[in-house]
Image (tube, rainbow, N blue to C red; front, side, top):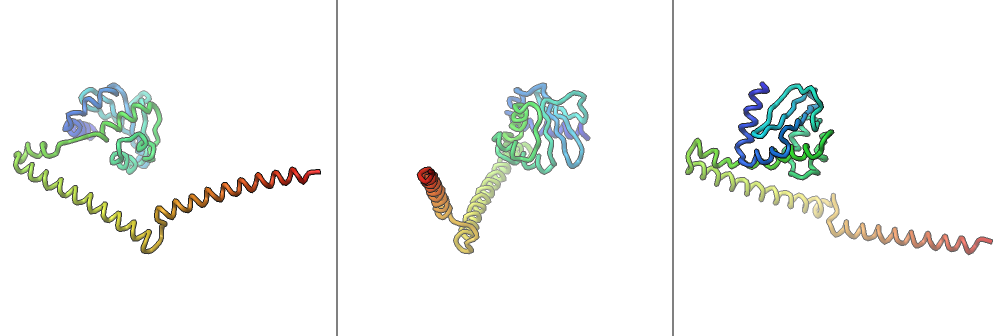
Amino acid sequence: MLSTAEKALNKFLQLDPETNARLLPIVGKVVGIQFRNLKYSIYFLIQPNGVRLLSDYANTPDVNLAGAPFDFLRLSKAASSSAALFESGIKVTGDMDVAKQFKKIFAELDIDWEEQLSKVTGDIIAHQVGKFMRSMNAWAKQSVGGLKQDITEYVQEEVRWLPVRVEVQDFFKQVDETRDAVERMAVRIQRLKQRIKP
């Protein structure tokens, strides 16, 4: 089963011509993945042309990532920033640079699906499908953006569950002014105490 998964993963990684360049900095390194809920581990041995999957590794891996399967799924969809690794709920132990490079392999994967489809259907159909998918993607982004704006306006202006930005800024300004006034008052009280002392 692991051998089949390894072949499928390497075939998938090689769909992006830049994969080997991203593998290069961590060739020979071992990345351990521990699924906490399942109590199962997989080890990725990084090789020049892909990865080798191991169910057992006698030594300590260069880096170990431990988390729930959902945490790894969320990390795979996150932006390629280093912060995403720490915000994912995954516990990282070992060489942090290896962990970042390992995430980068998957986060920056760029597959030209239109080209892959053209090998099966031909260029014309693949181009039409690609054009349709791009327009659907643009429509989805625009719809989500509009919905987000509508919900924000409804929550802030109609039902007044959340304050608008100006109100928040005004509140923080008032907090700052109150804090400054309290500090000035404390200084005055201290001076008065010293004057009253016999």
